[in-house]
Image (tube, rainbow, N blue to C red; front, side):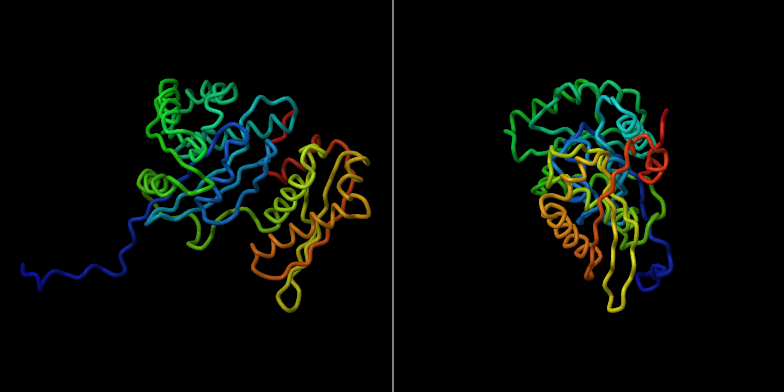
Length: 311
């Protein structure tokens, strides 16, 4: 057949797409949320210096070529002490076992400490392709990174090892490129312009919780909880959002409000600016603080966060 007679490619033929779930697991503060945000290209998971910030599964969606990669940012895996801790760790391992691949994130500065070593013990039972991701490489010497990679692979045979910096972006393109060919062939599960499956109401509440934790640091227990009570579209395109910050004691309520309302005003201003950037429209944010004792033992709160309530 001559070149002139070669039939043109059918414009209506389906694309050979790929799509899969990649669970990011690691010890608290390994940098999972920062990495997910960097891979997706926008904020889908909150980031603070406080451990155990992420509570439920947060899915961030990235496109690389014809592949849609759904990253599951899991709560940090640690030794649980309380019911909320147990629910978070159970959710993290559930997210790992339901994925197509598991990416194990290690803080390269800390290396394989007790928390990471305990994580490796359980990982041996996860029968999925496992990738080692050494994060924060911009802060560690190369010879130390190579020694850490060798140590980790001696404990568990990883399919591949990646060295990245979620903060600077180093190594992320190689990581995405590998994942685009490693996720299963199949149709995309989300629209092309969707970057997360977290509802805007929930993301807005998480942004406010992030600002709350960053402002108060160790003054407030991490059990503090934020709920979006009202989301109203206004004429002119702006949004009125009402949120409630729940704490367990009156003394914590006073801390959140601050002297003359100074603290809550600062939290509201920071959260409003970031939420407005996410929704790309003006936001009117109203925060209220209420005491709800032992909310961490309320099954309804767990359902709202996507966690299983365990006795």
